[in-house]
Amino acid sequence: MRRFQMLINGERVDAADGQTFASLDPFRGEDWAEIPRGSKADADRAVAAARTAFEDGPWRRMHPGERGALMRRLAALIAENAGELAEIEVNDNGKLVAGMGGQLRYIPKWYDYFSGLADKIQGAVIPIDKPDMMN
Image 1 (cartoon, rainbow, N blue to C red):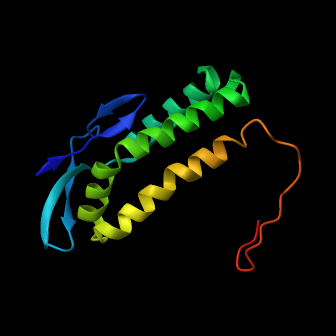
Image 2 (spheres, rainbow, N blue to C red; image 1 turned 90 degrees about the vertical axis):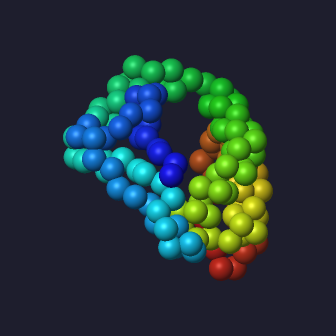
């Protein structure tokens, strides 16, 4: 069975109280992973780390173009790890491999698109040509 940890303050950690729960693969009907059962203390720890990162970390002072470059790097990492990400999602929620493959081909493209907007904040909304979507 695969074991996961939480990511808090840049470190992989277990729940503060050590509690976990099993993730059931709905297709196979069996447990496939052990997940930390995060508590209020874990949430508080994560929020405090995020607040510190925002207040004292580089992101807040970073030029929008640099933020866009980091988003492009995230897109590349998602693309590079698409197989593992697909496997996790398929096991965790029973999605079809083919469906996950499609989603994981688009997600990096979305990050690439939005990374290009990071330094183009101009106070305007560009209309899209999809009648069922509002922007």
